[in-house]
Length: 140
Image (cartoon, rainbow, N blue to C red; front, top):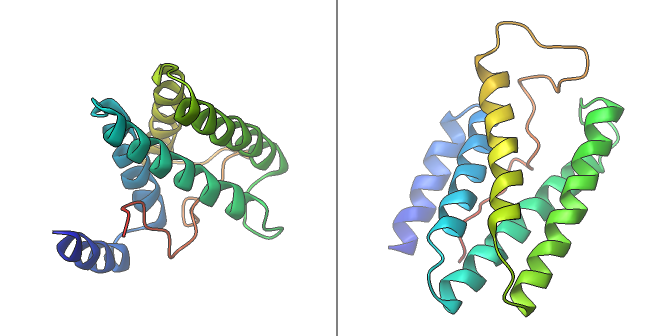
């Protein structure tokens, strides 16, 4: 099964626009968090969510990534908060609703930007991604 997912990821990543990859990654993270019913699935979902936000943090740290300073700052603050919250949630039985809310807000914003006819001055160009090109959310 894992081989099939990896193969699918390679083929779809090559044909998908960067913004679509971002949308898919946040959608997958949300699904994992929502479906975390036991400790094992909870830890897996939190690990994948932390991996996603770590990738976002790595990408926004690049100087010439095409993002405005405001967007980079906001994503950095959210990324640091999300990764810290993931660690706390792994160690303590705290709710996942705050992570779900932030991820859903990001997903909604990505979808809105994808569907918008023109971009604003503070928005990232639609041909760039907040995630590295080689990012894969599914675990090996």
